[in-house]
Image (cartoon, rainbow, N blue to C red; front, side):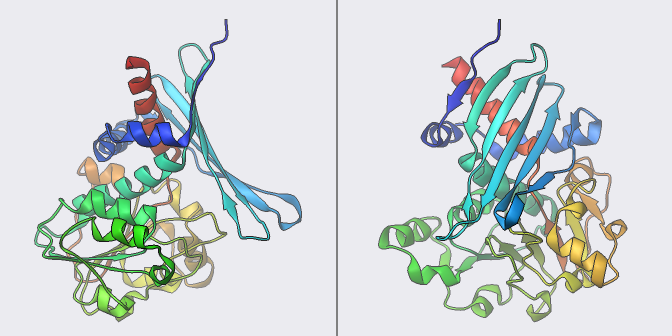
Length: 317
């Protein structure tokens, strides 16, 4: 008989995620990818008619856990601005039945930030001491939480144009992240002498030109649903050592990679390595003679792995 899946709303997912070691789950996931124990298909982008928005499906298979799944995330155009939601469906490879339908907002925030943290841990110089964070929303705050213990940071600087509209409560959430955190009044002040710069925005266009940095640094960048979104100028890829979360899928979705390929002579073959290669020690670490750029687009496998972890916790209870 068909089973009834667990339905997990936003608040339940947030409560259970506290008990999950998200970076460790992702490290295993990328090692499984390297070992051929997981499957990560390309993202599936479907555009709504008449410019009404789009949705992206993120797929993934975890053979050791005998589960597969899909996260679907619509970008719905509206008069009050775009509406973005996300839901993850977890399926059993043994019975073919649904196990979990989960509001993926918290999963998306956690896996986005934790993927960056895994990359920072793998790529940042061991002597890195100055961290810059560009962004101030939930994703940016999660980035700080996941990376704050990865190096002996002497300073953490944060800048975001959106700080001007934050409530006192939101500002308190930022200030309480880490005693070393300093809020700056300009991008230039935040990135000055930075060893690592984490771009954690929802911007559709470039927010940082790497040429403005005073020394070679690790720059990390994430995705938003806006078409061809990018946080660095596409032409800057030609002057950096480029890494990504998964080389088989990222170049076909990352906005700056698509534009750089079409307009600036860049090619996906220039990617030095991805997380499966880094975590299985199949690729050399950068020498920092120039900037290092890490780009993640968000993988369906990450959502499936976290949904599976939450499902297991829920079943245990």
